[in-house]
Amino acid sequence: MTQSYLLENTMARESRKVAVIGAGNVGATCAFVLAERKIGNIVLLDIYEGFAKGKALDMSQGGQVLNYDGKITGTKDYSDIAGSDVVVVTSGFPRQPGMSREDLIGKNADIISQVGRGIKEHAPDSVIIMVTNPLDLMTYHMQRVTGFPHNRVIGQAGILDSARMTHFVSDAIGCSNEDVQAMVLGGHGDTMVPLPRYTTVGGIPITQLLSTEEITAISERTASGGGEIVKLLERGSAFYAPGSAAAIMAESVLNDRRRLLPCSAYLSGEYGMEDIYIGVPVILGKNGIVKIIELELQESEMMSLQSSGTFYKEQLKDILGY
Image (cartoon, rainbow, N blue to C red):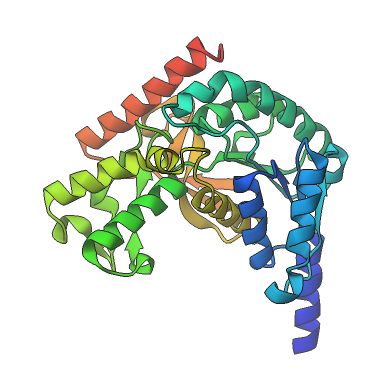
């Protein structure tokens, strides 16, 4: 019975397929984390075929070390993503020092249009997880290009921002990252909304563990977390945490884990906003977003969240023409 269960489990994993579009640092990290978690077959696609194939081969050669039996392939042909259950999109220009996420809009919108058409043609039943910046705008753009149901197009957003806040909180308190649960809503950018009231350590709100000054400093550092890394690296932007966060989202979809994660989701009245993608808590399962969770927010928190939404609505209209 045990052998039968293991065989069925192995066959189920091998039948699953994830495509990662963009074989740069973020995409390669995402693919590697998925391989480590024995998620299924992985296709790494990039316009530079040798780049994708080389990274895929490198990961494949680590299969014995990682005890990974899935197949990892590299390609530039969109037909190779056919049958993918999940498509993670990381393609686009990375941020450079002095550049905001919003500065990338024009450059990356054209790329997302091309990628979206490829996904629509070859993986029409997939769930799309967006990582390309500016995240909330590119997630909205991807949904419009593909025409997929809103629940099947999701942006990474708050899972990464919350992970950054988690790290800063654990550093300040001197505890394990594992015991911290942070919550960050709003746009994935300078207008994000960290929520200290919903951020806990072992179930204890950080408002009982840290001073107001410490919490304010952590919230501000969280909002500028990506920019801090861009400045330190001087060339390029963060990739370990973003790639890992995207992999965790993909895993929740593939395994129907129904994780409660803050993601960029399409709102149609929730939190008083409509026709916009922005970071809110969702339950993530096999069909993408199963449910949007509406937290009870204080007036100041709600105003900050809606202000973040207004900022992106204006950019959607003024820059992308939606």
